[in-house]
Length: 203
Image 1 (tube, helix red, strand yellow):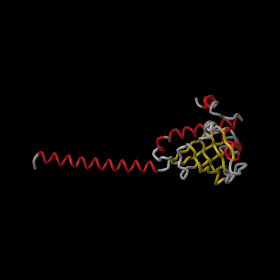
Image 2: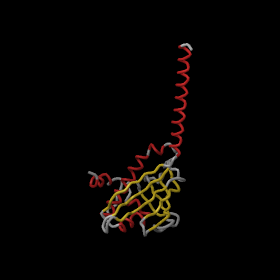
Image 3: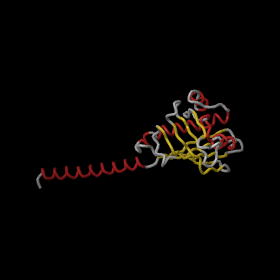
Image 4: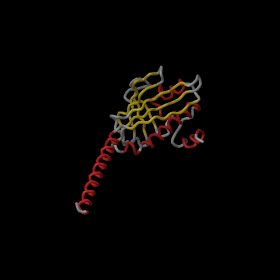
């Protein structure tokens, strides 16, 4: 075998390996895009679990009072209060052109937990077939508790999911902190005052 033939064989094998690696990476990328994303955020609150539950569970439609990214919110489709089947709209801009509709299901006030299903999203890149959050308020002592949100979502288009995961996680972390402040002080949290509020808790 001449040196030329030997070099050609090496080149062919190298190309084959590169093609196989490219295929594997592409397959993994497509899988990652289609896969639903998930994460959990939480914060400890110096308040009894029932006080936190009143804000996040019972007063489901008034989330704008404790969420810095929600401009306004209200009950919709005949809902009047939090509970199984309650629905709310969360407006994310003043114009009302960017919003999500959520339904409260698996409502369990005895264990301070429920699931919020996103069933409609306007100008928000969410795939509503795969997007929901599980809210939990966990008693720690008689006077302290932990507020936890387990977020499961898929974006539209799907490849955005892993790109914006950090942003979504930061947004919900800010929300848990805002709930903490609202429960402990009674002061509503807005996009305008949240920056100064956050400084009180984050050193």
